[in-house]
Length: 272
Length: 339
Image (cartoon, rainbow over all chains, first blue to last red; front, side, top):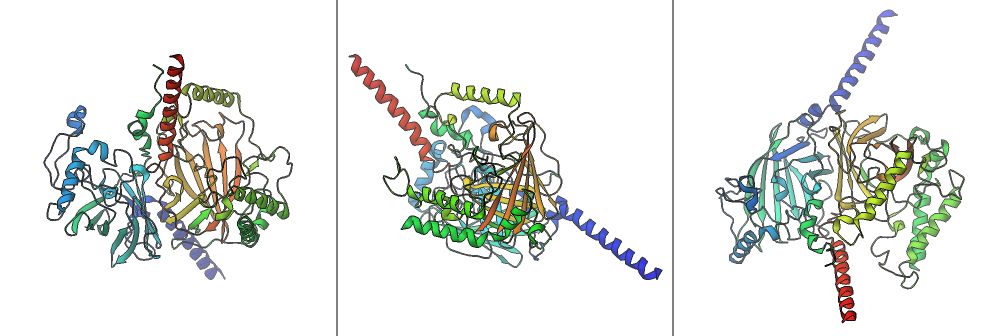
């Protein structure tokens, strides 16, 4: 029975080859990460992403200005930016506008970024470092370079924030092909940028992540904080995929870079 | 009452949750395979063995075998008795006056390991190779380095002299036992594993430490780029996730290791509620031969909360401030007595 046997051999070899190819494909970053859909049929947001704008300095439109650390000269200057806010300006309540002015004046002492504190949301999304999305049906994890901050998006088990935190408590869901994330439970200690724009513990952020092509996400967020602003407002920007073949998050454990600033005055002085 | 209840809960947990892996452990001294237990891990949608979920690796088992024990395994009865005693000793510390300085109510702050569940482990030490359960002797270079580190440490002065004199744990930079290798400490030994195409992520609760392990056979970072947790690359060896980590610094110095340490971790799901975690340390500059250990990770419940360690590090601030206040008081006392 040579014919059936050779057919059997052919099928076996072909199957093995197909399996081998699929294994190789799954283990290659480009194939795995850039396939448009996950096995459960959702847009595949896995990968390393980064914003490319000047909002980390100031989310409002702004001209260039000298930076807060004069010895850094041009390297430390605030680059100009168009901002990320729809409508341009933030709708502060009058006392909050005054607080923002004070924050800006004292930013070297008050900006949580300088102390390596967890950046909060949405600030983490547009800091000038890459972040990685690790997507499963139950959880979408976002891991940020800065301070190695982590956001856990609960996709199936939605609960109220059990406690206040820096990065908030995020419930996610799919609205068609858009990932919608509802985040509350903030501790009110985070800022939006290096210019003193701030929020309170009443902050409520609703974000929308939409893949516009394999290497770009459209990111939009509606920000509501009745203790600070007169009305909700919206930010939007593209997020870009980091395409370096060896792209990965590297350690940026910034705590030790802030220790002299925080604890330096408590260092033992030599006996007089 | 409270102590007794905790112990009873712990023992029930151990009895109900650990039968299959114990059988597996007893089959082959240390070289446990999932097949030995007749278990096949479920699969993720893209076909990886599924390690996902919340896990704890709390243990009362010491890293090295105590000198007075010559066996590799306890009997089940002996192991349960040891856990019971350890749990009782931890719970005792909830009662003021039972130990010299009750600093915390252990149960209230979750500092009693048995509260979160401790998987039963019949091993007398986590180290199973060398077979005596103890680290191999240090090489001459390893000894010299250990002496140098002690001397450097001595020159730095007291831990209360500066923040930088404290351990990485106290400074909220990296928990000593967060690793890798990931070994449990006294509390909050929780991990969440998430898998996606091309990556396994492990979120270590302590100091919200994310480990992202690529599975794409990429090369390690250039040799001179070094990180506290090294640089990890994973692959599947059958049903076992194998993670190789290099590019360490000389700052974590795991058990005296140098920055040349090469770590291989193996994660095997041996039961629905159990991952066997094995690790091998290879650092010829420190030890004459590689050594290996293993311990179970037991399924637990989530979620893992944000551990904003640095942001709330009042203890480091107050420790330093207290030391400076003491010095000031001492200096004033000297001034007064010399007047």
